[in-house]
Structures are given as structure tokens and as C-alpha cells.
Image 1 (cartoon, one colour):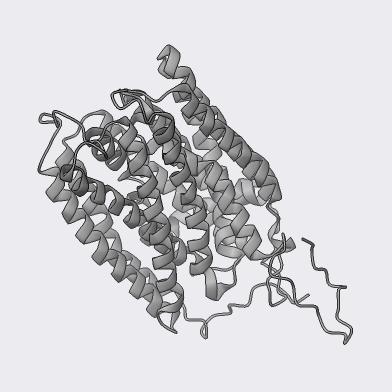
Image 2: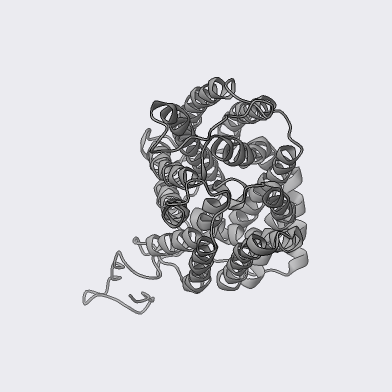
Length: 455
């Protein structure tokens, strides 16, 4: 794979069309970014999806996740500033390294049952995750051609969630014969750490925006690296930006439901090995969901605004149906009336099917919801500097919501109340996103969608 430069011409004096598979093509960069997230947040998601971080008592994992998302709230907002100052490689490598430490803290907890290390590692992970997701957001939304952002988001989301699928297989396989075990074994955490370290290495393959060349010969918008004070002031101004304020409810809701789904559906209803089995399908459904919504957002109508309205409407309908199913399921148990025997994928027969399908559907909705919001953010601008700030703002608000959600679960708020809160938050966000599209998203013929210069 090679980099196409301005001097490379054909014999007729015309510019040579870049080959499809190049390290400096948007497709290659988004794919590589997907594998970085496959190894780090993808494995983190699989670990969290086990319920309680794979431990019998979810308290340590809940407190660690609170530390993760509290720190993420700050660094999610400031992540764009670090990205614009440090560039993609240093920002992503620093972020990825904190995931290894976090998985290692649970390996330590498996033997010593001291929360302090896990909580400190969680706080450091929150800082690192803010860096990683700001860099990911800039790559995912600014590198692709403007008219194919939904497709590239779907590609990224599918690779990223393949990490959750593989990560679900790890505890399923390594704990398959431990159907009565309460906590996962050491080999599970070690396997997660190995994948996460691979993500650190892969992050060094991400190129800056001005080195990425699209198939039509245009470059992605070049980032002018700014002083930290300049970026910090720009991020603060986002709190007065009407576009970002309309996204706040969606951002707050988008990770709020994880504590309920992971701990109180997967964790309370299923035994240890079945939780890993379920996660394979939860994250697999996310792959399908991201491709489905990506197609709607890119190809359903000629008008970009019409595609935005269509995507929001589809997610709203599907979300309402799935949360209604969750309500029916939640009527069957509570903290005061837990199932006597946890469900097993082999031994529970028909009783396993309904809760399993619901949990898988939650994964489908998660991917469709977040891919839709990322598409909307990408439709608001085309330069990576602005989009890195937008993405950082989105992740920061998202993390604030998640930090609150993990503490809600720690304090044993009634399960029905948790479900109603989650359903209400997502429902409130839909009309605000419709307003965002109506007011701020322009059709391609109304806006200048040509990013970069011909080379």
C-alpha cells in the first residue's frame, strides 16, 4: 500500500486514480479505526456486558464504571482539544493503553477483592477513553466522502462491535464447563488484555486528515493544530451552540441504558456461561443494526434531510416496540422477587427464548440509535477539527449520563423505575433530533460538500 502524491500522474498528464485499498484511503483508515476499537472499547463492552465485570457482586464494577464515566465526562469534552494538538496517533495510543490497565485491575480483583485498584484504573480509563473516542469521531465522520458517511459509520460500527462478539466468545468458551461458577477465571481477563494491547499497536497506523486521499483525488479537511487554550475555549462555546443543545438528550440517553441491560437483564436472569453466549448475539445484532440504519441514512432518499427524518422515525418506532417488550419482561421480576434459578442456554428450554431475544434486540437498538446520532453529527460539518469537538462533546455528555446510571444501579433503584427512565430518555430525544435536522441539516445542493483540494 502506498501514498498517492501530487506528482504521480498518468502518461496523459492526468492525475492517477487512487487505488481502492491504500493505507491513506478513507476506507482503509475507517477500517483500521474499527479494528482499534474492536480491540479496546469492543473488549471493554464485552467485559461490561458480562454483568458486574464478570464478578458475582457488581458493586466493584459499578463503582469502577462510575469512575470511568465521571472522568470520561471531562475528557470526552476535552478530547477534541487533545486530538487537535497531539494528532491522531499519540491521542489514540495514549487512550488505548488505559484499557489494558482496566482489564488488569479485574484480574487483580479476582484474587484480592480490593476495589481501590479497579476504581483508579476506571478513572484513568475514563481519561483515555475520552481521547480515543474524540479521535475516533474525527476519523469516522470527516474522512469518508460526505455522501457516504452513513455507509462508513456502519462499516466502523460493525467492526467495532465484532470485538464485542469475539469478546463474548472468550468468557463463553473459557467458562463453558463452569455453569455454576459465579466469577470468570483469570484466563478470561488475560485474553481481554492481549486484545487491548493489540489495539495500542494498531493505533499507530492512523494517519492525520491531510494525509488521507479520497478516491476522487480530494484530500480530507486538514487539521490546523491549535494551542490547548484555543481548543478549550472552542469546546466551552459548544455549551451555547443550539445544535449541540438539541443533541444533549440523545447523548445523555445513549449509554444510560447499559447498566440496566448488562446488570439487570443479562446479569440477573442468566448464569455465567450464558451471559457470554448472550453477548455474542447482543453485539452481533449491533452489527446488523448499524448496517441497516446506515443504508437508510445514505440511500433511502435523494434529499439528505429526508434521509435524516426517515432514520429518526425508523429508530423511534423500533425503539418503542423493543422497550415495550422490555416492560413486559420486567413485570416478571424485581430486586425483591429475583428468579430462583438463572436461565441457561442449554437447560432452560422455552423460558430462555423470550429474555434472550429481548436482550439481543436491545443490542440492535443501541447500534441503530448511536449510528443515527453519529450520522447527524457528521451532517453538521465536514472538517475534522469541528467534528472532533462535536464528537468529544457528545461523548462527554453521554458519559455524564452513564456515570449517573451506574450509581442508580448501585443504589438499587427499583428495576421498573430504571426501565421507565431509559425508555423516557430515548423518547424525549426523537422530536429534538427532528428539529435539529429541520433547522441545521442542509441538503447537498444547499451546502458546500466538497472537502479538501484536488491533488
